[in-house]
Image (cartoon, rainbow over all chains, first blue to last red; front, side, top):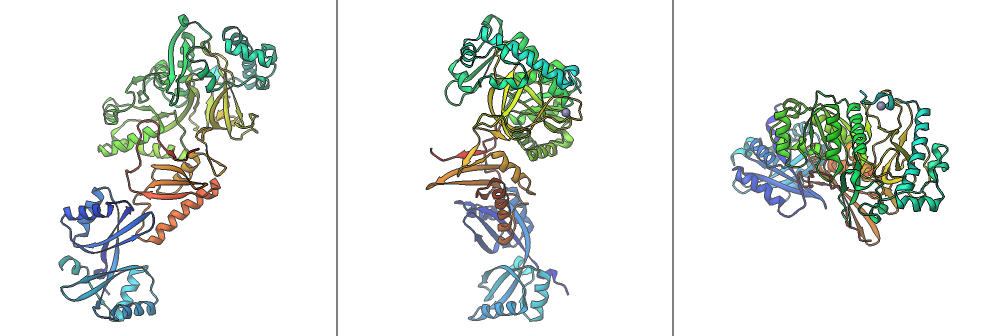
Length: 148
Length: 433
Ligand SMILES: [Zn+2]
């Protein structure tokens, strides 16, 4: 099975919880002509992790590194759910039943095709893709985020 | 390699006899030439006859920085100004500076002592030495200069500051030895990298002689790696003579003290009693050959330990461990003695920790708090909060185990901790006493 195409590149950026750092990150991306498709901020008292899915991940990575940010790249899975009540709950039940470990997740709503998309970071991405496909979940491939 | 081999390898028995003889002479000399010591020795009932064995040095009173201040500027000099050829002083952050002076003979001895430590580190007359210590009142610049000139090395007296120019000189003139503070060496490596210069390929450095501030083994490793050199520590302080009191040999395992010129003791700074052999305490130094400014039992405030075991280099002198801090750098946090160097040691032992850190001590209510800022880098940053927490917890745990107090480690963004061209500003104590 080709699981590679379902691995969506994600960029994580370390930010100190200081005024303006969040904005500075998005500014660098904007200046590099990069579109942010989905984003989440996880933070603690002391620091935050900004996570992005963008249209041009390599370029985003390079421009952030050039601006002296601390950046990591990794992969997430995008699962489409019907944008209606119960859609998310059903997906989470499936994941729970499959017994696959979620590191974190965040949402992304694309108004154009009425789809709600959940982005998941799993402990074992290959296992997660395999199991979700068996359950007929709709996984988006990485090209989806380049086009929109 | 030796500079004065006979003296550097003298057997311990002869060395002790020499020390006792010189000490007795110096006591009489100081008594006759320095009113301050005449008063003190009278008060303590000290004459040269008081010294029969080397242990008798404990009968002498201590000399402190306050004594220098009280006798500012020239009250401690044993010679008239006619015989003085050099005056140095250390920058006093509060009040008056500490003034020291040298006769011609003192300058000659000083140049020999620095030549010894340079030779011990493997420097030869073929070397090109860049001295990036400030030239001026501070003893570091001129001290190293005269000593290295003494052995016939070619000196680039670059002095401190203007880092980019320093690196250009180093590259263009092919410097093989670098003399500066360890934190400045690290800073230079970083600036070189930013200038697109690879120290390993583009520079010819092979030896670093670093001093004037305490530094850890881990910092040594970082400097050695980033500049592709062997980094040697040396010790000295202006009140004693300047650099040259002690220096590492190629074994890099403690600094050989020039015991034919200085008698060293290690005491508990609070009880003023000698510590047990090999224990940490404050090093106290007595000069036994100086003319202009002999000093007895000077309280250096540096915390170190002594090692009398034989060294493979052949020198018979005692070795002092790198000072792990100063009695006045010692932070007393919730009643516990903490040296910043202990924190550095722990941080640098953790894979991937950047050498840039800062310790902030504060007080919340009645409780002291310690925050350690560490610059984040790709090795220390994880996308998963869980792993990130795990790493921070690991650092916190290790600090707590070693120091015995809770410390809060915070990651900060790169290049946000102040860089230094001289001594590092590692500690910010916001407590008001
Ligand atoms: Zn040795």
